[in-house]
Length: 94
Image (cartoon, rainbow, N blue to C red; front, side):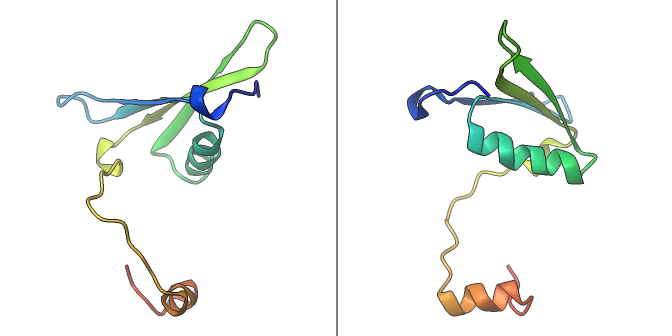
């Protein structure tokens, strides 16, 4: 993948009220990795690569069939180390 500085890595999410799905365009390598994992494990996600003239990946566009999978949180969940251990063992719910 072509290397962009952190300041140049962008993400755009677009959806309309009338449509069921959403599009995410990103050049953010961390987000590409995260969304690629969703594509691999869920039929709700698909992707298309955008390459430069030399064939280097510069960005990816993702389509999510159900835009309700996108969330905007009001609070960040902060867990203690013990809560993290319990959650890893499946003993603590969200």
